[in-house]
Image (cartoon, rainbow, N blue to C red; front, side):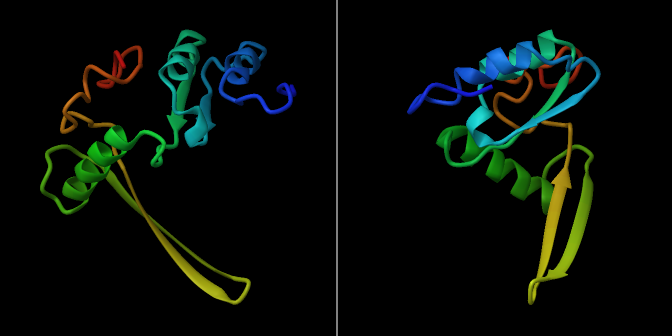
Length: 124
């Protein structure tokens, strides 16, 4: 599906999603797709989502950054899973660390603001 020339890609996402059967699937979208409407549509179509968050939503980004810093340092309640990857290609070495959690109770609006049918992150 091609968007109109010079148009924003965000309006094209709901149309594209409506063409896909996402039930039981995990949909991943970059930061451009970190939109309430997109998350709601995925949940309505019985899918789950992972939406990237960058500086495009500064307040939410800062809240999540602080939450994850506290959580990764063991200063926040909840459970999670630390992950690490290492890659040595193209003449460089790269280590990435990830902390994954579904427990967003530490976010100010964690339980009220994010769409999800039965998860602790419903409502957004």
